[in-house]
Image (cartoon, rainbow, N blue to C red; front, top):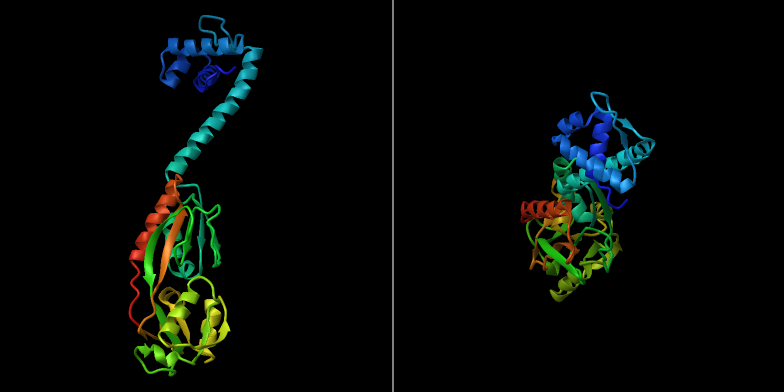
Length: 299
């Protein structure tokens, strides 16, 4: 049975449906002798005749063995067609992609990536997960956005530098840049000490600014609500400020910091030495294009 080939089964199905070897050959684009050879090879492989051949103009008829072979053969042909179609869709960019992300990227970069992927490949399956752990792991993800380099057997692409800005309630500081020294002892609401937050606060301290952190939360909307309530100011990266639409909020003001703390760096990671689907490769290209189109403007 290992000698049965799909082309043999396709020839058998054509003969059964057309009734003659000649019409089956025309349908398949073969010569009649080629179809006869394929049926002969199939009969040899299954150990018996699959057609009774009455001769003359009379149509051929399936033998009992032929009925069994054709029934299973059609199922195999259907699975082969499904496999071919699935591979073609995969090569065209359909399929599934799993992407890890975090708040700022989810708000500003990822929507454009998802929209363009779905426009180009309507059948694709995009799965997103959002987390901001201290020690991120790519796990089963195809791609992982993170604000910093991740150690391990990974490749990466730096998407952009994300400068820090001061967000304060209107009237807290004069318009324009704010010297870092003005933040020393000032109340501040802030992210938890994960990801790049410790580095940013250490950079403030090295410049002589040690704000009094009165509240921490990982939720940007909550932080900004506390700033509006005048609980304290916040030092946030441009992506977070831009994604929340702070510039259009009359209750808030955005200021540059002088000197400016080092920006956080946004990276896209994927596992090294792994073959990627066309969908994942296209997602990397789109993410790079979207990030290149972002221009953090001075406050």
